Image 1 (cartoon, rainbow, N blue to C red):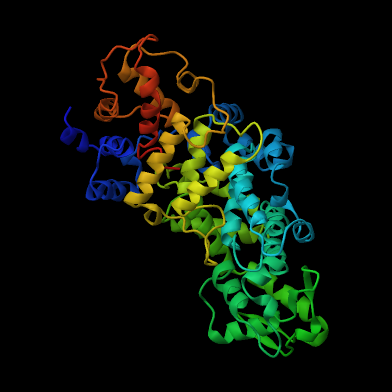
Image 2 (cartoon, rainbow, N blue to C red; image 1 turned 30 degrees about the horizontal axis):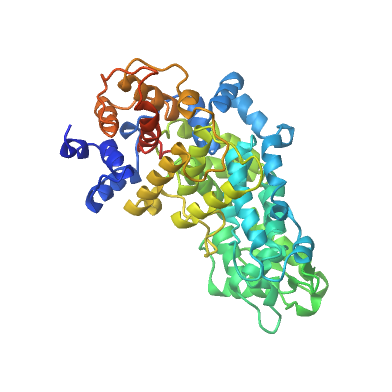
Length: 510
């Protein structure tokens, strides 16, 4: 097989790219264009509903999670995941104990760190990776990631060095399976959000419009407001600020009084009930049809397709309103919908999801001690532009394939696959004694059968014959090449074969 022949197939190009044999930028871009908006017919993903559910509702299926889900069935698995407190999470908890500031309140962070230290940010980002990789509460962690992106407070960002970790605990994690109205109000009264969107500096003499605008435009109804609405909302929200102790306070002396009429919300807004008026406004926004549709659409983009079916969005909005903004009924309706079942191959993993799925599918476990592997994984995600919470704008990370499709991003994924498969970086992760044997316990008789077994284990289906041949060309083998335990080249070739299967466009799909 010549290099030109190898370049003819997308997997072949992946093979050459990952091993540094040289692929032109146009060729790499061509692959990315082909995989940026994948459809079911272009992929090797099976129609197995359990595998599909776990690809979407978790950060990557493992043999153990697949076995559990097949035993419980879709409904049973959802029931179990919707009760995360009942799921043992000892392995993840031990890792999180090494990151005490990831869940610390503002007072604790201020007591332990110098002002404006990044250490709490660092621990929070590493905790997000650990939870995605090793928590058994996978659906909860997926929901947490969604809501953290929706009610986004960047980390690191100016002024929230001491409160951002507490925001994660008291706003996002506390309400991720609760009611959106409650989460929205908790966010509005948290010093991290008040600081991030400048609400803490808003006064009756100089109302700041930032939080009022993003509250409507990003968090709730979308772009339906006028400038008059923004000004009125900014006035109504004055008084909600951060006190000298660093926590939330309502300061009536900063509140601008006077009747307001904002997107159908009318209130006298007297001095005596300024905070109550603000909370009533937030409840009003949370229960608007426009908010229900916006949230239903974003959930559908996250879990179904970059361009979700309009009928599904409308039905989920109905569920949201019927259940008084409760989140779990909406998620249950989404994951049991025919549109979800038919969406195989229509979501692409972000760099964060690709990295974590690789860790999970390879069976890589936490460091025996310390957090050096999490440091390395976090830094790799910084390079990929997708480290947890590290998006500076208040709209949160984009969740569509085209944003993450580029030759550079593709090369970064290939390099990470090989580093993790070979154990080169990060070295501190706990690995199976024999990675290849853990993935393929019974050695097949030929190299072609070995790649088939790896593909079934890592992706869920065999690669096309031409792709298998292209992968094996890197090891200078043919699909028919015999394979025995005494083959001296197998140990050296194994990491490359594993990585090249992970480089398949199908593994990039959720």
